[in-house]
Amino acid sequence: MRKFSVCAVVLVISACSSPSTVAPVSVPLQYKMQAKPGEFPVVDACAAIGDVRVTDARSDKTIGKRYLENKSAESAAVTTTSDVAGWVQGGAEDALRRAGASLGKSGAPTLRFTVDQINTTENVLHRSGYEGRVVMTAELTKGGTSCWKDRLDGFAENYGYAGSIENYQETLNHALDRAMIRMMNSSEFKRAACSCGG
Image 1 (cartoon, rainbow, N blue to C red):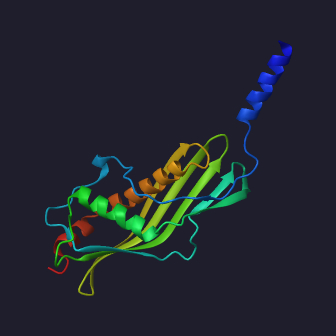
Image 2 (cartoon, rainbow, N blue to C red; image 1 turned 45 degrees about the vertical axis):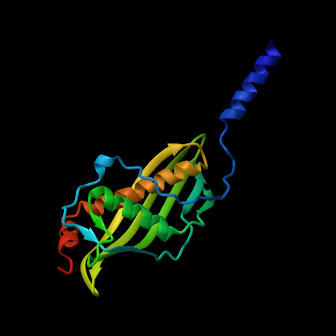
Image 3 (tube, rainbow, N blue to C red; image 1 turned 90 degrees about the vertical axis):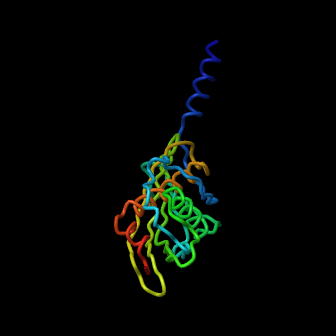
C-alpha cells in the first residue's frame, strides 16, 4: 500500500510539472468570427465597397514567440505558411457584410489594408496564456484619391492548452475582428464609405 502511494505521488508530480523547453510552432491561419455578432456596428445603408485589397508589408514574417513563464530567454518562434493577406481579406469582407456594407458594388471605392504587424505571445506553464495583436493601415480610395485613412489595432487574449493551434487561431481571429470593429465604429469611415468619390 505504501509503495502504491509513493508511485501515485510521483505520477501526480510528473503530470503537474512545468515543461523545461518550448518548441517552434506553425499556425495555419483560418478566419472564423470570434467577436460576438452584437459587437459589430451597423453602417448606413449607403455604405459600399467596390473591392478589398490587402498587402502584407511586414519585414519579419514570424508571427510571435512562445516562452516559458519566468524564463523569457527560453523561447521559440511562432510562424505561419498561410497567405496572411488572404486571411485578412476574408476577415475584413466578413466583418463588412455583418455591418451591412454593400460589397463588390460597381463604382464604389476600394478599401486597402496594409498589414504592419501580427504578433502573438504564448506564456507556457501548465497551461498557456495567449495574446495576439494585429496592426494595419486602412485606406478608402477612388480614382487615385484618398477619402479616408486610419491605423487599426486589434488585441485579444486567450487561455488553454500549451501549443494549441485552435487557441492561436481564436486569439488572432479575435484580434482581427477587433481591428475591424474599431474601423467600422469610426464616424469618418462610415461617412467616407457613403460619399467617397461621390
